[in-house]
Length: 323
Image (cartoon, rainbow, N blue to C red; front, side, top):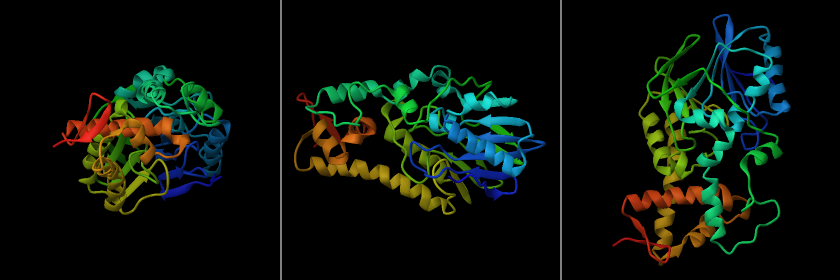
């Protein structure tokens, strides 16, 4: 477990978990903010994750400093789950969240909507699938799933909502809020043009974050990447994985992985029309990922390609190329 702080700059520190992969916590970024501290994301709602943060503060000698601001990239449990534990110990002046994620912050059960769990159940029910032990399936419930993996979520009540173009000052950093949906409806990234630093959240990092139609899907994810790839960036600070020093390469790799799915679907349909289940088996062969995130990722690409006029759905509920 990486409990020693990773110094990005003297006034900016990353608390990194043992692994960048779910169900581990997201990276937590700590800023010196005047006489206090501000945070970008807070991590999982497990005691292990919270202890990692508190231990880091103690190692830094910062445990007695007031928390000025908490900025949440979005309210998925690996980013915001520790809010309940944290607020039992500290009283931040401000908690920031994008307005589109507010409904899920106030009522975490609504995350099932942006995760498109009903879509997963509907699509799965139409398939002739048995559910292997340990896999998600028709009885799946999101909130108990988070809890079982020791990354529970919690209610969050921000006192400031933000939108595209807003500014947040954190110490010597002057951040512009970028609305970057695809992975979550209210996902934000923060950009300091003078310091050329991007806090990317889940948009860019070790892996491609999953995406669903209700969170913006492949279309909005790609638009978010296009929004940041034109910026002058020296450092990308991701929520999962190490600091990215080559922003063009880091952003391009994620963009290419998403576009790869589009091309793969078109190529698969060149040999003839295919059902949703057939396409799912091609692109998400592992039963453990077919129900989620396989179904919503595939659905978002099919919607994108249909809107672009590249494929169409027939009356027999199969997909084929146009023309």
